[in-house]
Length: 242
Image 1 (cartoon, one colour):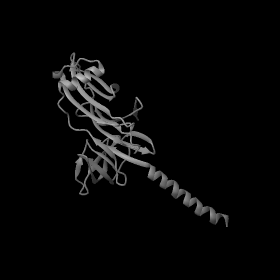
Image 2: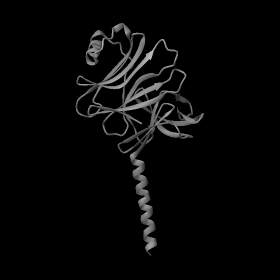
Image 3: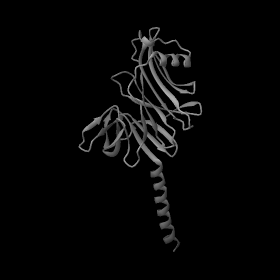
Image 4: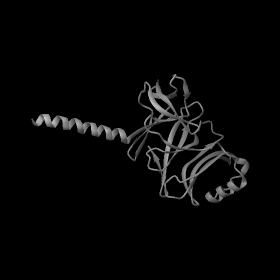
């Protein structure tokens, strides 16, 4: 009699546990080589490692969520992820964001590079106590958004500039006149070594806590795979999520 009662209870418990795991877990694919898994408030960023035959997903492109699929092909020791339409037509290889079909993402798109003017550059130089000249700036992006949900907007700035025969890439959070560094990278133009290329991609709330992570792409040159780094800014601190 006890066994007849215990077995159904165990089955119900297993179903409840699996349901909780399913509801609290989200998988996000960033480009062809990254997989982000969230469980509750925890976020984990992996290089692609699991084969996918075909999985329904929302593909995010130009600020819109399109229904499509994710698949993978073996490339050496890892798998490359691809976003495809229902007709198995490739959507994009290296620059897409996708999430499970039942769980949409909150994404803030960052516009294309904008032309920096003397006033913006002056603000940046004063913020970081630098002396960059306008003609030396190659790329510039900025977005004003409350990324840490503290009811006050922060400015995320991306800038690439030339100084003293080196190219510098900087990504910072400007929080009410206080600068917090996400990326600072120097590329010596006289070096024959192929150096890294960083790019500010999106703001994404991966775990639905209303705090947006800063997504940065990085590669070791044009012919190398693009990987994605994720940074969280909260309470005056920057932390890379791994």
